[in-house]
Amino acid sequence: MCSIFGAFSQVPISDYERAMLGQIAERAKDRGRDGGRMLDYKLAGGRFAILGNWRATPTTEPPGAPPQPFDGVVHNGVIANDKELGNAPGAVDSLILPKVLVRDQGLVAFAESLDQIKGSYAIAAIGTDTVYLATNFKPIYVCRIGQVFYFSSMERHLAPLLAAWERPARINPYTAVDLARMGQGGVAVIPRQYDHRALVIASGGLDSTVAAWALKAKGMTVDLIHFTYGCNAQKRELDRVVRIGWAGEMRGHIVPIDYSRMLGASGIMQPGQIAPGIAGAEFAHEWVPARNLMMISHAVAFAEANNYGFVALGNNLEEAGAYPDNEEEFTNLLDQALDYAVGPHRQVKLLAPVGNLMKHEIVKLGLQLGVPFEHTWSCYRDGDAHCGECGPCFMRREAFRRNGAVDPVFPPSPVY
Image (cartoon, rainbow, N blue to C red):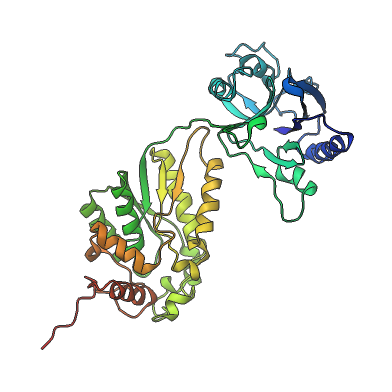
């Protein structure tokens, strides 16, 4: 809705440091073109702060609103219940914040006072001897140069002040911080609504099945979600997911994804185009465009709608060598994005329980957990049994062999 920006220092802010803040303020105009201002504050303990704001007037409000800061508070977002909190009719919603935020009793009291707010916010507020920053999903970035903390609504406002290898830090969503006590317990988490249940994206194969059992072993309630998208082994996978759900006393949800216009983009959706053996395990011959991203997006929507607090998948370290959407960094970054993908004060976290394991380590864990491997299906082909030749078949045979175990889908040949 606008830009908020400012600086906090334990010592007087020099003219040079003020000029740096001026550069930030100039760049911050890209999110607010309807006026604003900066104000100086002298705090207890010889500390100093500057708060600023550039306003972007909402389409539903008339122009000409008074500029922030309001009594030592700047706000980016919308307060939907400002009238219920006591704001006068027609008043700018942010005017209510100085009246409801507790700023003289420490960080915990400040964070708890945020519970009154219904809406969105990134807030910078003057405390007795500090500046508090708080966000639900509106962004705030911070960097420290010398003894001064600078902050603004976007990373791009701060980055030009830093060296090429440095980056501003984003205040985590649903977090309040005390800039005077950063590194000394000056962080408080703002609670969100979530349920301690996990929804596992299940293919019917080794990895997602072990992931589900690993979460169950941690005491979580686990259900499965399986996506049909037209792969060669779709009937086999669907059958095995049903069996796995039955064996693990987990509910199964079946959701179709329409890949009909992309059938030619992947070998696993075209009979006779499957890479054999180790070649099929070392390179993404059977890449399906954005498949994990599509499945995770659908699963997160399903999870939010049905009160699951976690979505999990079978990404693993072995296949990260060939498939970029198996790399741990993919799930780490996407998990961060989920804070902005679900509704206000809701939480859905993305888990990769076997994301740091190789295939033989996944089999070892599954054997320890009693995973019913006889129900799993790994083959890229559609047949009565695993082909034993494609990349996934090759990998699971080697993984069981390394563990000195018999793969129930590849029973040993009889000895005569």
